[in-house]
Amino acid sequence: MFDDLIMPPADKILSLMPIFRQDSRSNKIDLGVGVYRDASGTTPIPRAVREAEKRIHTAQTTKAYVGPAGDPVFCDLIGRLVFGEAAPWERIRGIQTPGGAGALTVLAGLISLARPGAAVHVPDPTWVNHVSILEDNGLRVVTYPYLDRRTGEVDFDTLLDHFSRSERGDIVLLHGCCHNPTGADPSRSQWQALAEIIAERGLVPLVDIAYQGFGEGLEDDAFVVRLLAGMVPEMLVSSSCSKNFGIYRERTGAAFILARNADRADAAKAQLTVRARVVYSMPPDHGSAIVRTVLEDPALAADWRAELDDMRSSILSLRQGLAASFRRFTNGSDYDFLAKNKGMFSLIGLTPGEAVMLREQHAIYIVEDGRINVAGLQASQIDTFAEAVLAVRG
Ligand code: PMP
Image (tube, rainbow, N blue to C red; front, side, top):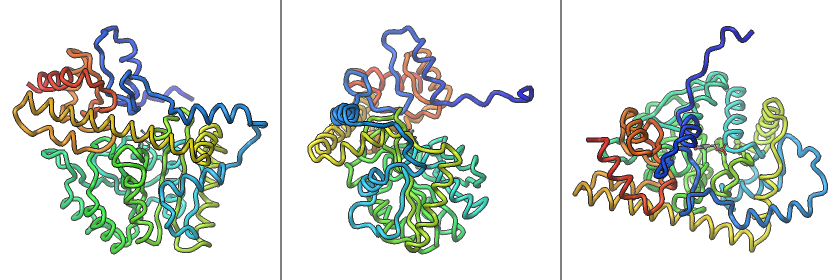
């Protein structure tokens, strides 16, 4: 039965992890995998999360099943974080999922059920797993132009032109904030113009928000979700708690739908729940219990928000340091986009060959497409990194 199976191509991000671990060079730097790192190079467990875990440990009396839709209180709390208080709540429903990837999976299954083989437009480039999850659910992936590689910013005119020609009913995947892998987000006025085209042409937004709080702050990062929720009849949202709560391995997220009316929202939620039941039966509980405990306690919630804000500021100062360093070494502004990009990622503009050279000659690990995780750098490594990039570019 397994004789004809071929090895799948190696995952360009995950395959770096064991190579990095085995690298014995003491000056090695990991800018590959997308996890936040603090100044000591560790991915911290936020203080509020630790405290919540203690409380859960003491208070929990059972590990019985939670049910395919997960904890409704968690869904409500995350829903409010994403959509804000003023959303059309009577038309919104959500279920708890195993991370953002779980949310995307059940949402892709729902789209496929409602519109078999539908076209989903994804930015070029996008997180590689978007394409895999959508195609795995029988959807047709179309790419839309996104990045102006000369400036490192969104190529907005070309993007708008693409959508002004899209078919009614097509689905548009948007990164809610902190675009992965480019770090380039549309400005507010650009989001507004894009939302108008989406509403006007009857496109259905699928917003993936996996880094809320890492760009401009918790509220500002949800701008496009909230904007669209007030403008379109139907939308889908995938939310991840992995990064902003620092609970990556606990697999915590939520899938939301906004429907034309309460009745359609109930039907869509019921079908989402069926997808969950079929794919993984039920989401894990621990992560959502942490998030609920934090968000229900005003003191813990305030502490979590403060720590998240510290993470955001620290990435921002690394970005500014990087841009300044490149300015010094190049006497030019070609890398200024690094300071403008949002969230953990940017494309540094290296070819796959140059990324390999960076690894082999300088012990710096970045993804083959040139993506760097800015949060993987420490302030003391900024100049070393900039010099190495310039050296491999020749
Ligand atoms: N969407 C994007 C854009 C991501 O970068 C990621 C994580 N790398 C996810 C979704 C999924 O996150 P999770 O770990 O919560 O499944």
